[in-house]
Length: 122
Image (cartoon, rainbow, N blue to C red):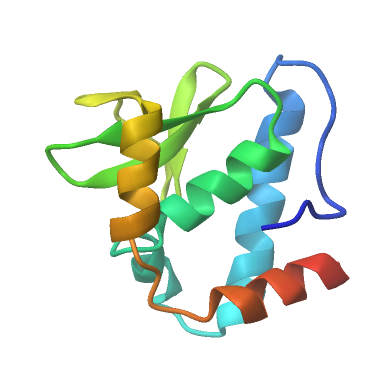
């Protein structure tokens, strides 16, 4: 997954991270043209989104909730997924082993290559 034009290089205050996060969600909403698009990132696509956000938000961390088998990204003293800021209950920073597990098992139900090409054009 490559870096996008909307990547932010500001400090860890969270202000830029939040604007990057919101911009990514806007772009995804335009791309999918479906009112239920967020479900794709709650059932298999959560790691793909967390990795994209992690690459674009300085000082962010990928976090995992093993109980719910869901991952998200932590920045600006909060945890965020496709639905917005979420509860940190049962989340912890993902270990390298957990990252490997997510890469293999959290499979998006959309064409990631096509979406990544779309993001690169922006």
